Image 1: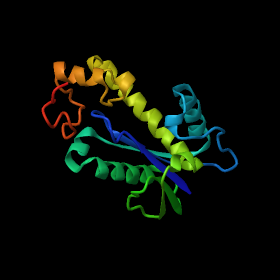
Image 2: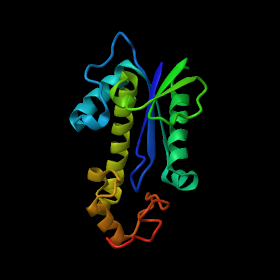
Image 3: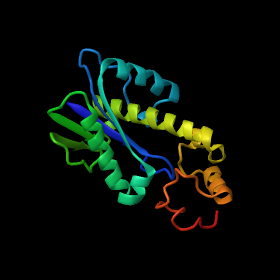
Length: 185
């Protein structure tokens, strides 16, 4: 059984990232929970433990693809890619939320699954750590936007930077306020 989750539907910049995790039931990391409920340090520790004990598939969909196909389709595509990247073929996939992708195995959508199913929680942690690291690297290349601290979400400082600097090459131009030409900030 695999758990799937994605991170990055709401930000104005960067990819959407998905992970698929098949836990080793004899070595389930202790403290798995929704990644948003954990500290960054705890996520990092669990990330290392998940990678050491589980089978993991990871995938992303770029900001350009998001702009082309929309964020919903991009999220579903990222989950399909993550499942395909697993080193095994699961018989069943549990997907966080109520909108599962078409997968080549039995699929069950679980609302708030990242806080109730261990494999989804593990996928949530892996996806969040990977995306946060990606955004931190983008932040080094484009420091004005504060990606290391806001992960591309529309904070006041991020919106202010976009207003003064314009969008960087990794912004999702189909997202408001970028699509609307930066409304009054």
